Every structure is written in C-alpha cells, then in structure tokens.
Image 1 (cartoon, rainbow, N blue to C red):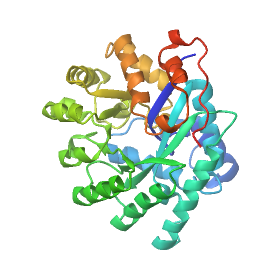
Image 2 (cartoon, rainbow, N blue to C red):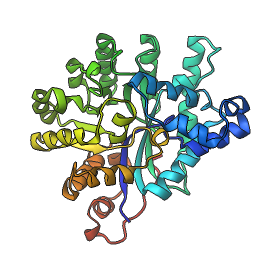
Image 3 (cartoon, rainbow, N blue to C red):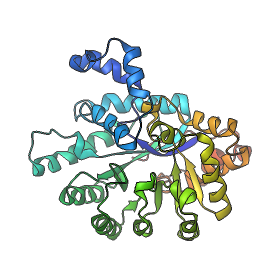
Length: 348
C-alpha cells in the first residue's frame, strides 16, 4: 500500500465529528444539549465560515475538552483513523499545549501544567497497534503574551523526544512580528525546527518572518499575490504546507481552481509543496481525498502529486531521526524498489 506523510494537522481540528459527539454524550452533556441531534452538530461543526477568525473559534470547542485526563482518548482514535483510513507513515501533530491547561490557574501554574500536557500527548502517541512515526509541533499563539510563548519554546527544547518544532498560530493577521522574530531566533538558538502560519490570508503577509522559518504553514498568498518572493523561498529551501480544503472553509478562496496558480507558480520556481489536511475533523476530509480533489479538478497531475508526496517526507522534521532504514524510505516513496514496504514504527 502507498504510505503518506502529513506535515500540517492540528490536534484540535483532527477530531472527527462523530468522535467528538460521542465524547460529548458520555462526558459533556451540556455541550450535547446545544444541538438537537448528531446531524445538527455535524452541520454546525463542518460548515464553511466567512473568515479565518470565525473559523478559528471552532478550535476553542475542542481545546476546552482536550484536558490531561481526556487527551489519550482523542489521540488513540486520531492515530487509529490516520493509520487505517489514510495509510499515514508519518504525522506531525501541532497544537498550543497551554490552551489545554485549566483556565482557573495562574499564568505560572498554567505554564507548569503545560509540561504535563506535552508528556501526556507524547506518551499517548506511542501506539504499537497503529505504529505511525509521529511528533509534536508546539504552537505559540498570537493571543498569548510573550512570556507564555517563550515558555512554549523552552518546553519544546526540554522534550526533544516528543517535540520536533515550534509554530505560531491564532490567525496570521494578528501577529506582533517583532516579538515573533525574537522568539524564532530564540528557538533556532536552541536547535529547534521552525514553521509558522503565514501568508494564509492577505492580512497575514509578513515577509520579515520568512527568513526565520524552515517551512511555511499555508503560504498560498506568496504565489498568488507576492510571486516576487518565490525566488527567496526556493533559495532557502522552504516548503509550503498547503491545505486545500481549509481555504474554502475559511472563505480565504472562493474556488479550489484558484489553487492552480499556487501549484503552477511554485513548481515553476522550484518551491516544494506538501499537501496537508490542516483540520481533518473540522473538514470531515482525510488526506487521500485532498489528493483526489486536486487531481479531479485538474489542479495538479499525477507526476506533480508524486512530487508533493515526496516533498512531505523530504521536509518532515522528525522523519530523519526515526531510525528507519533508507531502504524502507525508498520502499515508501518508490514502491517499485520494494514491493513490501514496512509500516512506520513510533519515533519515540
């Protein structure tokens, strides 16, 4: 079977509607009572929003229930679905661990509790039944104070066995770029990989942040609105993490056909693209469907799809440290060289 790498998936947005609904039924009856039935909930949870900010509010629903006590429940089901239905060999899960800590605690106490969240996610991800190579990307957040975001970077360096990189999330139109440059420089000084939600929307075009990133979360406005930046992106060897369904769900794009310009200009400029899901649960869409959708709309061809699939492994932060023999990697990317590729074992 073909095996894939997923580089941009949020822990909160990965919970498929049915799993979240069942959790509400068992543990959060007050959440369940807001909806007449499952169909009502699924419609609310997965329908398109008008703006990215409106869309991001959905994450707060899941963040509140993804506690230290419940995270194992969600992660087991996430890995099971990714392995069984998506054939993932590699997965990077990103999230803001601070937002999974109790809100009644002081900021200092919440930072301390954040370490526990990282450990819970790391240990829960060590599934032998669904052996996907996986790691965490810790998200700083545009609405968190500098001190908390710096603590997130510190925690990333303290848990190298679980964490492969740092990111920034929270809507790319709300960034304090001066602070973020300092934080990314701090992360790089500690040897931490970097990515960031950037150039997703027209309000989120911050070219001053680009030199501090190894990969670019989304980045679609670079080829769409600022193609002059593509040469620098290519020279730095950066990869765009493009999540097709997201842009229709957030109102960022009106039609998926607009992505053809993104792929065409990136291929022409020599810029790698990894196709990702972003929030597979919120979209009720899995990675193979993202591939199929781009193909059936003639946005890419099969050769270009293969290039994107190869790019995902090439730019995966933790893959090179997963102790997988090169022959296995060749078997995944080029099955004709190895008719029986070995399924990925946990990186931990």
